[in-house]
Length: 429
Ligand code: AMP
Ligand code: GLY
Image (cartoon, rainbow, N blue to C red; front, side):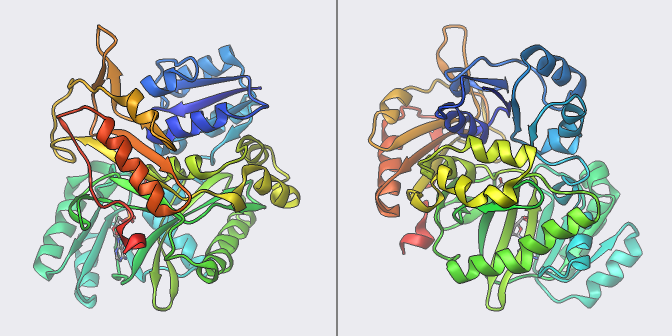
């Protein structure tokens, strides 16, 4: 079987790495891929949001399954275009992917299906938005409706600051993505990420994960795409997981199926674990990055039957057997430390040389996933992005996984890189 993985981040490297271990897979292709993925299979330099070029590539390779990693091609309708050509695709339709690409769409769905989340208002009119804001209490949570590269949520303690933010967003701060905004109630609690593989009907729940969104130790400083992750996250115990299933995921999947937009692929439920149970912070239409890295590393079995069944249907009957093939119940505790270029998430230089990745990979339990890397003209590994490597490790417990991941980080020789020193602190404290 041939599988095409679409994307070029640490998440997609982890997916390609896991898929390549399957006994039923002969070849993994990547588009566009990265230097880590290049060691797994052929990479094709195509922009995943260019539907025309992507269709040309897929017709040329003729894969048995296409796995789409990032949100942008999903929001651009890549899965619909490839399915229309008769290919099996793991990833939601453009319509279903609005769960992530439009915050307003997703909040309205939650309201219709009675899914617990923060109370909110949705606005295209500045005066109405400002009037609504006055009825709220601080902290104020203001969100651009559309995709804003992870920067579209602002939380303000002060009303005047909040008013300025609302006005900035609605007058073009994020272009078209913020002409519409959502203002919502602040939720108190600890966040966690739940991932569900689904064909729109059946579902497989992966172990709960947690990421570290802030750039600095102690969860301080600017927001980033994610500086590290771990799973399982003890804040989501079996009881909480059951509530996520019955109060959030089941009503969402059946509601979307009833409304003729069945959700197929991986559903990412960002939850706040509050005193009154789990509440949805956001839905995403893809795996989290770097949560995917720890999930792929920790699953001891074969993930391909699950991906295939999600793409083709029938999961409701086979979910137990398929979850067993993946080894969900034998999940190994896993942690990922992201190494980023000094300066990230603000501006940072490109082109610094990275050495020692092979030594890091040689540490017991460690796998290094590439994100913003490239090769220079001498084939030396260089950093070309903000988040550059995801040093990931499994262990007999989380403590061992974390200490192995940091032992891997020690082997990487990259003076221009930095990483957080406290990944998984909430679980280890
Ligand atoms: P989002 O992109 O919607 O996940 O928001 C980004 C981050 O903002 C989340 O991970 C939370 O840390 C925070 N956040 C978003 N909405 C809320 C809320 N209603 N209450 C508290 N924190 C929130
Ligand atoms: N790690 C958070 C995200 O992928 O959105």
